[in-house]
Amino acid sequence: MKKRWEIEEKDTWKLEDIIPGDQAWEELYEEAAREVKEYGMFQGKLGESADILLQALEFEDRISLKIEKLYVYGRMKSDEDTGNQENQERFGRAQALYFEAAGLSSFMAPEILSLEPSVLQTYLEEKEGLGVYRRLFQILEKKRAHTLPAQMEALLAQSYDATQGAAQIFNMFNNADVRFPSITGENGQELPVTHGTYISLLESKDRRIRRDAFQALYSVYAQYKNTICATFSANVKQALFYAKARGYASSRQHSLTENEVPEEVYDNLVAAVRKGLPLLHRYVGLRKRALGLEELHMYDLYVSMAADVERRYTIEEAKELVSEGLKPLGEEYGKLLRQGFEDRWIDVYENEGKRSGAYSWGVYGTHPYVLMNFNGTLNDVFTLAHEMGHSIHTYYSNQAQPYVYAGYKIFVAEVASTCNEALLIRYLMERTGDRKELLYLINHFLESFRGTLFRQTMFAEFEQQAHQMAGEGRPLTAQSLCRLYHQLNVDYFGPELTVDEEIDYEWERIPHFYTPFYVYQYATGFSAAVAISSGILRGDSQVIQGYRRFLEGGCSQPPVELLKLCGVDLSAPAPIEKALEVFGELLDQFEKEGGF
Image (cartoon, rainbow, N blue to C red; front, side, top):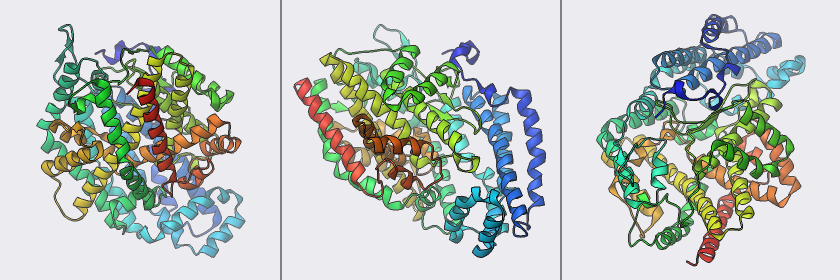
């Protein structure tokens, strides 16, 4: 494992495009820390005139952007090496400033809502600049019943910093402190098991390596089950506290309402996927036959079902494949891809202490960034396409929207990224003339369905039930959570898979559970992306034009409405059902091509 300083500069992201360096960060921090106190000059005065209201809202945008720069730069520097204490300290200060600003600005929503609608309408007519904030006022109006008096809003805002401990502890444990036993390779060499290498080890053709990696990883999580249960439980209680404080019936209702997503979207997803589980059971049986195993275990789920096809890719090969596969999105989109590849938007390789996984992030007014842990697998090629989908979505939204509406909701965040994956897999499947490679690619697409539509919905069920248990006053123990997670695996994968006891601890290592009710959106986004990518490949002009408007939309409309621009309505189960149909067609194709 390389140290951070051993990674070549060309393979690291150029964070100086946000802030030139640590000294400049300190200067901006001092400036923002002074200016944030100026919120007080507006408190109690927002109803005095249209001018004062506009000045307050514009100040809010300016100071928020400065703090966002400090926060994002600080977090991304911290993610480069989670063991670097200076970066941790800098991020902690940015986080504290963010929470301070949230407390000082907490009077704004109650004061705006205290204005009579007729007064607000008069202000909008008097002051042209206020027109930008018309949708913001509409969003606030929807939250009227859940907005507290100014003093209570201030108290809640001040509490946020103190309630982040669970997520912070998990992040430090999972990324900086946890170590897994190494295993022995095929030739007797030592193979390190890390977050970055784990999936590639599970893709090994050597079943003993898969089993050993699986057991090595979960042996550690089993040791810490009570500690991680405590952090998870604390995070659930935090979500329940804020939901109850604002008068929501549940933490799920709070989370989905904040993102303007109806709860029936969540229920439609779970119900449709549950109905489609026979397809997943069929997939498990196919995998068992394809691998020639008498008994299929959890550690057999990642190795390719396509025999004798093992491909590794350099990062340059991955960039070329992604560029070619996304050509249906147009020349301008391709130009932005190349810009991201060439101008160091991407932090490519794993290094000691680097945050696991991958993400796209950035700051309004600068280009987006991508964190990866590239290891040369086909999954990594698709991760590149996925994260660049996020980044270009962000780029278009930032270009088209004012700051206040540029940040799109989490619900639509996974659509552009997954649409890229769907386009790329179709491109790769169509260009190959090799039957074995075709099977390999179909296998990958099937895995995308298993890992995203089915697995993330299973995660969503786990999360929903865990929050419901806590909401009913039932304690969350390691035993109860492991039992719940085990049964979900049995339900989802069916009778042809041996559900190993080690998988009971998998919930412990899922970072997205610390952002409550996030994971279901991978599944809804995947379903929407399958529909949109199909329309793009058909050359459907309505879908193509609607998709561009969607990418530029930010949060200028509710997310379900934005997707309707592309012809996708997730308030009904139809998009989920259509995705399941595609999964069934891929199973048919794999069975036919593979002779199974």
